[in-house]
Image (cartoon, one colour):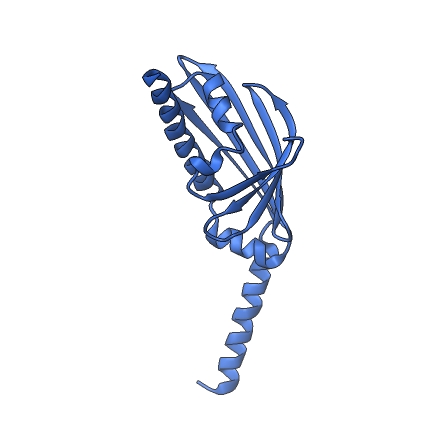
Length: 171
């Protein structure tokens, strides 16, 4: 194979990779429905205990609340990335809407809706994020699974609910 042909193939492959990256949508949205074996008020208390999340979420190293308690930052353990949150809407025990983002990486919205159903709670969680540059767009596609993130959050929330219920029974 001639050197010119190798360069031409490499150029085609690089061009194709660039085209694919440019065509990837910057915004992704995922919705997951989860059942909790707990009353809606209990689930709500865990999901809105923003300051306490480092105690039960494995990926959170630190939470810093704003004085007015409507905004905070979370520092991720694995990467050190600081993610900011602001409450946009809060209807106790039924709906929570958050604005999210990480400087230069992404911005988005997180919606959690809860309803009591047959002795438990159904949570419907929607996360929509927009990558703010090409590199974060590629990194999110390659290394971040929104569905898995929402499901892991719910799994850890369920464990925290059980822990809190166990502590209540012991009192």
